[in-house]
Image 1 (cartoon, one colour):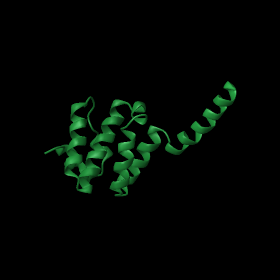
Image 2 (cartoon, helix red, strand yellow; image 1 turned 90 degrees about the horizontal axis):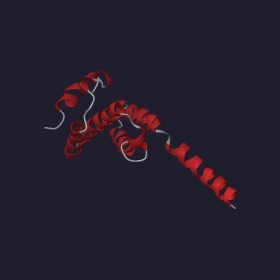
Image 3 (tube, one colour; image 1 turned 30 degrees about the vertical axis):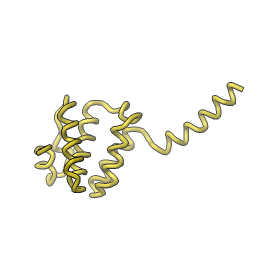
Length: 116
């Protein structure tokens, strides 16, 4: 009986994990959506990435990059309060510097400015 339950649990868990992907996969898709100017998609993916359980897989620099992208995506979506919240979260937990080279040149001023 215990073996059947274990096998059933494994069978159910595998498709869920494959469907959601790991943190690295979600980050890659979010950055791609951002670069394609799909800010709604990028913001949704980044919020999912920054929530448990995927957030547990992030190192500090990836978390900082995800928050920076989220702030910029929210800015371009016209959600000033959400952008400010993301940048505040970034600043309050900041242990690493954002690499501006990761963003297109048009976004450097927005990333540098952070919350206003």
